[in-house]
Image 1 (cartoon, rainbow, N blue to C red):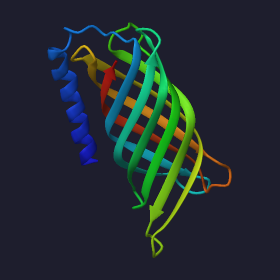
Image 2: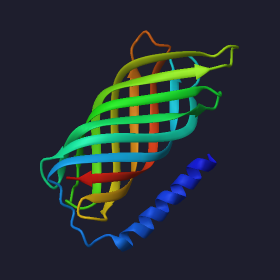
Image 3: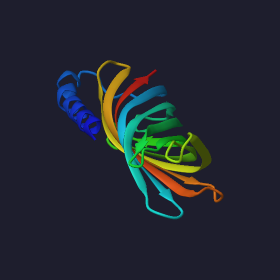
Length: 189
């Protein structure tokens, strides 16, 4: 949890320091956009039988989008969370979504959401030799944040994203949820 506290402190520092240098560049979105997020988060594995298992880890995402207006983007996003749960189980979650982003005032605040597919991989050595299992299913995610335009084409921001992955019926787990707290880097071309 110490890493998560450090990340939240860093995101708070960005949120306070960046606006002082931002503002001279207007938020103009028209055409192609690339974005990366890096940070940390928490995940919860929800088995069909038994108790849920949670843990912390690293997170990241990549997105490519098209801005139809100054307020609306549509794109593809890949989001991942990698970490260890409370039961010393390594967990890797991946989500691939069609994402919609809305900038309500055509400024820096945004809301986003999307749906698509997801995968979960569990690895452990609790019962002797290492074993792993993976499965896939549907995925849904929502997020919110703020970005500051630092140059004509580059924006730095902070975001909080929630994602759920519902696995196929033949899996021992019904779904996985993860929340990512990230710094984001966006380029508008």
